[in-house]
Amino acid sequence: MKIAYYSVAPFVSSGFGVCTRYLAYHLAKKHEVDIFSYFGYEGVEIPFMIEDREVKIIGGNGTLVHPVFFERYHEYDVQILHFDGWVISKQIASLKDANIIHWCILDHDPLQRAYIPMMRSEGVKLLVPMTNWGKKILEKSKYVPKHKITEPIPHGADPDIYFPEKNPQVDFLPDDVDFLIVAVVDNYGIRENVPEILEAFAIFLSETHTNAFLYMHTEPIKYGGYNLYEVMNAIEDKYGVDISDKVMFKVAKTYLPSEIMRRIYCKADCLINTVKGGSFEIPLIEAGLCETPVIATDWGATGELLGETQILITEKVALKERGIGVRPSAFMWMNRTSSRQAVLNVYDIADALWFCYNYPDKAKKTAKNMRKWVLENATWEIVGEKWLKLLDDIEENGFPEQKDIEVVSNI
Image (cartoon, rainbow, N blue to C red):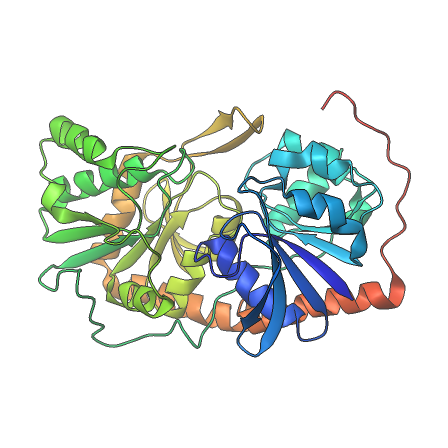
């Protein structure tokens, strides 16, 4: 089949870019793949090699609405969309003669209202969640046609790149600390709780007085985000704890090679990923392959990745099968999606850090469990085969019959 893959360019090292690179490679095993890049490449159509397989990249105009895709989508047998589709939901809904499969970004409860027009469109044939939690969000919504919902296909990680490495050397990270915390986050908007991680780190330091260090893999000042230097100054003012010399931000404006990220994960005593809501969160499974303990939000997709609760450490902090989970204290209504994401208490995040620091053997056991789970469920080889199987079924049987769907005009 001829496939249009609509996302970011394959050489972008964000989570979306990693997905483009690996999934396009696996799809190209049996299909002709053209990547419609809305970010990372803005230019004419070019051939591009992903290892030994050739795809094409078609650049957009730097916005989420890719003009060439909307002109040429009908040239393709299938269009796979992987981005926050709810942002341009009505534009996608207008493509009523398309054969769209949407790899859904589901990180709210209930379903983001803006998603509804595209999910009900005749041109959107299948909705692919990444987790069972995401599937339940789709199933619970009265607006989502149930015949469009598939079994989950997760994001993936590459065990040939991410694996345990003894005594990893990372030039810009200190060797003389007792506890190294790493956060792979994006300083954009409020979703990733970046100031809260800094605040929890300050509370942790004030309670333990340990020689700890926090590396945040993000820009300290970014348009649409926070001035994290000012945030640190405010935290120091509030708690009377000096954290400025114990925190480091991303050292280069360019993306770091995957091999360097592996060494960062392996050097860390824990990865912290306490987002308000995550559709999957690739750093959790990359760190897991490196057998690095993870602290994550015990709600939504990230809660599912952590597995079953083993014991409650505190009322809001749990030792899970594959990490340490921090449970929400409340939920916040997000203005653009008219739906909710989790709010975590910074003292609970600090308690999770305390546990990871004081019980490293228990934390390490969860990390080994995470590596085992990823190897059995979420390598890119497994993810790629799931997608090829889905496309094989479409080739053989076609898409599910599109039942009559009442138009919802007030959404």
